[in-house]
Image (cartoon, rainbow, N blue to C red; front, side, top):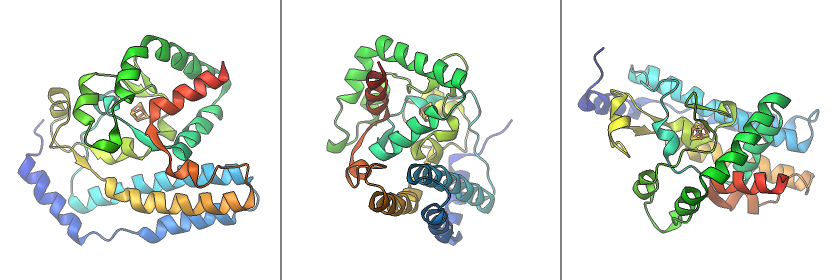
Length: 243
Ligand code: SF4
Protein backbone atom coordinates (compact mmCIF):
# COMPACT_ATOMS: atom_id res chain seq x y z
CA UNK A 1 0.00 0.00 0.00
CA UNK A 2 1.33 3.45 -0.82
CA UNK A 3 0.88 6.23 1.70
CA UNK A 4 0.67 9.98 1.24
CA UNK A 5 3.88 11.99 1.37
CA UNK A 6 4.34 14.88 3.78
CA UNK A 7 4.12 17.44 0.97
CA UNK A 8 0.85 15.88 -0.25
CA UNK A 9 -0.60 16.00 3.27
CA UNK A 10 0.51 19.62 3.68
CA UNK A 11 -1.01 20.58 0.35
CA UNK A 12 -4.33 18.99 1.33
CA UNK A 13 -4.29 20.60 4.76
CA UNK A 14 -4.10 23.97 3.02
CA UNK A 15 -7.50 23.18 1.52
CA UNK A 16 -8.95 23.62 4.99
CA UNK A 17 -8.65 27.36 4.35
CA UNK A 18 -11.85 27.06 2.30
CA UNK A 19 -13.62 24.75 4.79
CA UNK A 20 -16.51 26.32 6.66
CA UNK A 21 -16.62 25.06 10.20
CA UNK A 22 -20.23 24.64 11.33
CA UNK A 23 -19.84 26.23 14.75
CA UNK A 24 -23.62 26.63 14.96
CA UNK A 25 -23.87 22.86 15.47
CA UNK A 26 -21.92 23.13 18.74
CA UNK A 27 -24.30 25.86 19.92
CA UNK A 28 -27.32 23.69 18.98
CA UNK A 29 -25.97 20.72 20.96
CA UNK A 30 -25.40 22.95 24.00
CA UNK A 31 -28.91 24.40 23.72
CA UNK A 32 -30.42 20.92 23.45
CA UNK A 33 -28.64 19.95 26.66
CA UNK A 34 -29.72 23.11 28.50
CA UNK A 35 -33.36 22.91 27.35
CA UNK A 36 -33.89 19.19 27.98
CA UNK A 37 -36.22 19.31 30.97
CA UNK A 38 -36.77 15.55 31.01
CA UNK A 39 -33.21 14.86 32.20
CA UNK A 40 -31.57 15.56 35.55
CA UNK A 41 -28.98 18.40 35.47
CA UNK A 42 -26.06 15.94 35.84
CA UNK A 43 -27.35 13.86 32.94
CA UNK A 44 -27.69 16.94 30.76
CA UNK A 45 -24.04 17.77 31.42
CA UNK A 46 -23.06 14.25 30.42
CA UNK A 47 -25.23 14.55 27.30
CA UNK A 48 -23.45 17.79 26.40
CA UNK A 49 -19.98 16.29 26.93
CA UNK A 50 -20.75 13.24 24.80
CA UNK A 51 -22.54 15.05 22.02
CA UNK A 52 -20.14 17.98 21.75
CA UNK A 53 -17.35 15.44 21.31
CA UNK A 54 -19.45 13.59 18.73
CA UNK A 55 -19.74 16.90 16.92
CA UNK A 56 -15.93 17.28 17.00
CA UNK A 57 -15.63 13.86 15.31
CA UNK A 58 -18.35 14.76 12.82
CA UNK A 59 -16.66 18.02 11.81
CA UNK A 60 -13.34 16.19 11.46
CA UNK A 61 -14.97 13.68 9.10
CA UNK A 62 -16.27 16.55 7.02
CA UNK A 63 -12.80 18.10 6.94
CA UNK A 64 -11.34 14.78 5.76
CA UNK A 65 -13.89 14.71 2.92
CA UNK A 66 -13.09 18.31 2.06
CA UNK A 67 -9.36 17.52 1.93
CA UNK A 68 -9.91 14.24 0.10
CA UNK A 69 -7.88 12.11 2.50
CA UNK A 70 -8.60 9.72 5.32
CA UNK A 71 -6.63 9.04 8.53
CA UNK A 72 -4.43 5.96 8.49
CA UNK A 73 -4.94 5.42 12.26
CA UNK A 74 -6.12 1.86 12.91
CA UNK A 75 -7.75 -0.04 15.74
CA UNK A 76 -5.03 -1.62 17.90
CA UNK A 77 -2.47 1.06 17.05
CA UNK A 78 -2.06 3.01 20.26
CA UNK A 79 1.20 4.95 20.19
CA UNK A 80 -0.73 8.15 20.89
CA UNK A 81 -2.13 6.54 24.06
CA UNK A 82 1.31 7.15 25.61
CA UNK A 83 0.94 10.91 25.19
CA UNK A 84 0.15 13.14 28.16
CA UNK A 85 -3.63 13.59 28.20
CA UNK A 86 -4.51 16.77 30.05
CA UNK A 87 -8.16 17.43 30.83
CA UNK A 88 -10.30 19.57 33.09
CA UNK A 89 -11.79 18.15 36.23
CA UNK A 90 -15.20 18.47 34.56
CA UNK A 91 -14.08 16.26 31.64
CA UNK A 92 -12.49 13.74 34.00
CA UNK A 93 -15.76 13.62 35.95
CA UNK A 94 -17.65 12.97 32.71
CA UNK A 95 -15.30 10.11 31.77
CA UNK A 96 -15.77 8.66 35.26
CA UNK A 97 -19.54 8.98 34.98
CA UNK A 98 -19.31 7.29 31.59
CA UNK A 99 -17.40 4.42 33.18
CA UNK A 100 -19.91 4.24 36.02
CA UNK A 101 -22.72 3.92 33.47
CA UNK A 102 -21.16 0.83 31.85
CA UNK A 103 -22.61 -2.66 32.27
CA UNK A 104 -21.58 -4.04 35.66
CA UNK A 105 -19.16 -6.64 34.31
CA UNK A 106 -17.38 -4.20 32.01
CA UNK A 107 -17.20 -1.55 34.73
CA UNK A 108 -15.85 -3.97 37.32
CA UNK A 109 -13.18 -5.20 34.92
CA UNK A 110 -12.12 -1.64 34.19
CA UNK A 111 -12.00 -0.72 37.88
CA UNK A 112 -9.88 -3.81 38.63
CA UNK A 113 -7.59 -2.92 35.75
CA UNK A 114 -7.19 0.63 37.13
CA UNK A 115 -6.48 -0.67 40.65
CA UNK A 116 -3.66 -2.88 39.31
CA UNK A 117 -2.43 -0.17 36.97
CA UNK A 118 -1.92 2.36 39.76
CA UNK A 119 0.03 -0.22 41.78
CA UNK A 120 2.16 -1.53 38.88
CA UNK A 121 2.82 1.85 37.30
CA UNK A 122 3.24 3.76 40.56
CA UNK A 123 6.74 5.12 39.85
CA UNK A 124 6.07 6.01 36.22
CA UNK A 125 2.78 7.72 37.10
CA UNK A 126 4.54 9.78 39.79
CA UNK A 127 7.39 10.72 37.42
CA UNK A 128 5.14 11.63 34.50
CA UNK A 129 2.55 13.58 36.45
CA UNK A 130 5.22 15.58 38.28
CA UNK A 131 6.16 17.19 34.94
CA UNK A 132 4.78 20.71 35.04
CA UNK A 133 2.69 21.11 31.88
CA UNK A 134 2.01 24.75 32.73
CA UNK A 135 5.69 25.60 32.52
CA UNK A 136 6.31 24.53 28.93
CA UNK A 137 6.49 21.62 26.50
CA UNK A 138 6.63 18.32 28.35
CA UNK A 139 5.53 15.92 25.60
CA UNK A 140 8.99 14.48 24.84
CA UNK A 141 9.87 14.00 28.52
CA UNK A 142 6.53 12.34 29.21
CA UNK A 143 6.77 10.07 26.15
CA UNK A 144 10.28 8.96 27.04
CA UNK A 145 8.87 7.30 30.17
CA UNK A 146 6.49 5.18 28.05
CA UNK A 147 3.60 5.28 30.49
CA UNK A 148 0.45 3.89 28.83
CA UNK A 149 -2.81 5.73 29.46
CA UNK A 150 -4.66 4.09 32.38
CA UNK A 151 -7.58 3.41 30.05
CA UNK A 152 -5.52 1.52 27.48
CA UNK A 153 -6.25 -2.21 27.44
CA UNK A 154 -2.75 -3.77 27.38
CA UNK A 155 -4.00 -6.95 25.69
CA UNK A 156 -5.97 -5.51 22.80
CA UNK A 157 -4.22 -2.12 22.65
CA UNK A 158 -7.62 -0.45 22.52
CA UNK A 159 -9.32 2.16 24.66
CA UNK A 160 -11.43 0.73 27.46
CA UNK A 161 -13.59 3.86 27.57
CA UNK A 162 -13.63 4.62 23.85
CA UNK A 163 -17.08 6.21 23.87
CA UNK A 164 -15.96 8.61 26.60
CA UNK A 165 -12.41 9.40 25.45
CA UNK A 166 -11.62 13.11 25.65
CA UNK A 167 -10.87 15.58 22.90
CA UNK A 168 -7.07 15.13 22.59
CA UNK A 169 -7.62 11.43 21.80
CA UNK A 170 -9.92 12.35 18.92
CA UNK A 171 -8.10 15.27 17.37
CA UNK A 172 -4.62 13.76 16.88
CA UNK A 173 -4.46 12.12 13.47
CA UNK A 174 -1.96 10.54 11.11
CA UNK A 175 -2.57 10.65 7.34
CA UNK A 176 0.75 9.08 6.39
CA UNK A 177 2.38 5.70 6.95
CA UNK A 178 1.29 4.56 10.47
CA UNK A 179 4.90 3.52 11.07
CA UNK A 180 5.87 7.16 11.66
CA UNK A 181 4.15 6.89 15.07
CA UNK A 182 6.11 3.73 15.86
CA UNK A 183 9.44 5.24 14.90
CA UNK A 184 9.19 8.61 16.65
CA UNK A 185 8.08 9.58 20.13
CA UNK A 186 6.34 12.74 18.91
CA UNK A 187 5.91 12.54 15.12
CA UNK A 188 6.00 15.97 13.53
CA UNK A 189 4.05 14.63 10.55
CA UNK A 190 0.93 13.90 12.62
CA UNK A 191 -1.84 16.48 12.52
CA UNK A 192 -3.69 17.98 15.45
CA UNK A 193 -7.19 19.38 15.11
CA UNK A 194 -7.07 20.89 18.58
CA UNK A 195 -8.36 24.18 17.17
CA UNK A 196 -11.79 22.56 17.62
CA UNK A 197 -11.23 22.82 21.37
CA UNK A 198 -12.55 26.37 21.49
CA UNK A 199 -16.01 25.52 20.11
CA UNK A 200 -16.20 22.33 22.12
CA UNK A 201 -15.08 23.74 25.46
CA UNK A 202 -16.79 27.12 25.02
CA UNK A 203 -20.14 25.38 24.65
CA UNK A 204 -19.47 22.79 27.35
CA UNK A 205 -18.71 25.72 29.64
CA UNK A 206 -22.05 27.35 28.71
CA UNK A 207 -23.89 24.17 29.69
CA UNK A 208 -21.86 23.79 32.91
CA UNK A 209 -22.69 27.37 33.91
CA UNK A 210 -26.43 26.85 33.35
CA UNK A 211 -26.41 23.53 35.20
CA UNK A 212 -24.54 25.08 38.15
CA UNK A 213 -27.19 27.81 38.43
CA UNK A 214 -29.94 25.19 38.46
CA UNK A 215 -28.29 22.67 40.77
CA UNK A 216 -25.27 23.71 42.80
CA UNK A 217 -24.54 20.07 43.67
CA UNK A 218 -24.25 18.90 40.06
CA UNK A 219 -20.94 20.65 39.45
CA UNK A 220 -18.40 22.74 41.33
CA UNK A 221 -18.49 25.74 39.00
CA UNK A 222 -16.24 27.35 37.84
CA UNK A 223 -13.54 25.29 39.63
CA UNK A 224 -14.25 22.06 37.69
CA UNK A 225 -14.02 23.84 34.35
CA UNK A 226 -10.72 25.56 35.03
CA UNK A 227 -8.85 22.89 36.99
CA UNK A 228 -6.56 21.09 34.54
CA UNK A 229 -4.50 18.01 35.28
CA UNK A 230 -3.27 14.76 33.77
CA UNK A 231 -6.03 12.22 33.19
CA UNK A 232 -4.13 9.60 35.29
CA UNK A 233 -4.20 11.99 38.29
CA UNK A 234 -7.98 12.32 38.19
CA UNK A 235 -8.50 8.59 37.64
CA UNK A 236 -6.13 7.74 40.49
CA UNK A 237 -8.07 10.04 42.85
CA UNK A 238 -11.31 8.36 41.83
CA UNK A 239 -9.94 4.84 42.35
CA UNK A 240 -8.53 5.79 45.77
CA UNK A 241 -11.85 7.31 46.83
CA UNK A 242 -13.61 4.04 45.98
CA UNK A 243 -11.28 1.99 48.21
S1 SF4 B 1 -8.48 7.77 26.84
FE1 SF4 B 1 -8.47 6.00 25.46
S2 SF4 B 1 -7.92 6.84 23.44
FE2 SF4 B 1 -7.36 8.37 24.98
S3 SF4 B 1 -5.20 8.00 25.48
FE3 SF4 B 1 -6.45 6.85 26.96
S4 SF4 B 1 -6.65 4.79 26.07
FE4 SF4 B 1 -6.00 6.16 24.42
